[in-house]
Image (cartoon, rainbow, N blue to C red; front, side, top):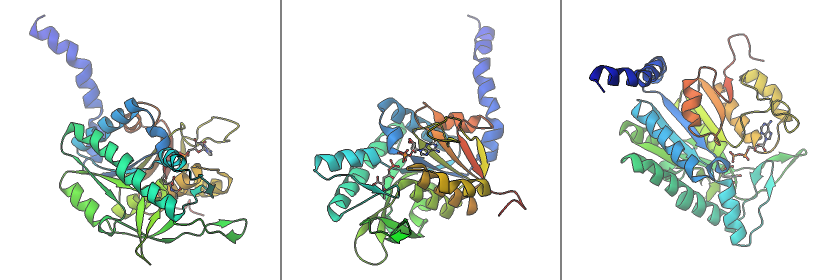
Length: 302
Ligand SMILES: Nc1ncnc2c1ncn2[C@@H]1O[C@H](COP(=O)(O)OP(=O)(O)O)[C@@H](O)[C@H]1O
Ligand SMILES: CC(=O)N[C@@H](CCC(=O)OP(=O)(O)O)C(=O)O
């Protein structure tokens, strides 16, 4: 093969890279918070592809921050400890004993695994929980169910975010990997926080450009569970109207997206974490593959 033909066969690759140039120019130096859900994390190949995508973003000049969940992994561990999992208002009822297991699974197992996968590509990822350096502070959350405040144990409502540690890591070129556990503002205990809520609060506090929530469905379905028509784009006001109709795991996810875009994040996206390289697919296709939430245009807000 001559040099000239060799150049020609590589041309489609060069074109693909060049097609990404406007996107890379627009997003260079921007922070993107990526929430990796427990349900999208059960497959080893998907986890490895997720790590590749995050490292790719980092090398492309963005500042990715990973916030992870681990609902299924926590439920499995509680099961092994003979503790029954119960959810109220989409949140895990967390007793003192359950909290020990939650902390052990999130910080000691799921976070370690993600850090390990990312660090196969270089000395990049550093794991922390919301307890570290006051990153996430919370007080006891008492959700309202049928007009009454209920006690669901050590579940936290975020009261404060300190972005100092995460920003220092980003400035050092690292990829922070954050477990959704908060320190208590009132006592020495720790709180269990839904990972979607934690990711949204961090995205807002960091002034992130994008919040990306990976999950185990294609996006927000218009008429779930009766149809699988994905809503591809909606404004904050449109989402706010839809919120009361949403169920289960979609509630904290979409509340989080709304919080993020109402607090300065340019886009919040819910995407299918079951699709390999879904992060790269989402960013390199203009309209995206999942559901995109954008702030209201001027005059849109209700
Ligand atoms: N409107 C909706 N569109 C899509 N999924 C929905 C909707 N309402 C409820 N769901 C449920 O929410 C789930 C995703 O939330 P969750 O199980 O908490 O995921 P994760 O572990 O990724 O945080 C979906 O698998 C689906 O069962
Ligand atoms: C309070 C509460 O419900 N906390 C969640 C934290 C983990 C999480 O959110 O994980 P996913 O993103 O995989 O659902 C839990 O205990 O399951």
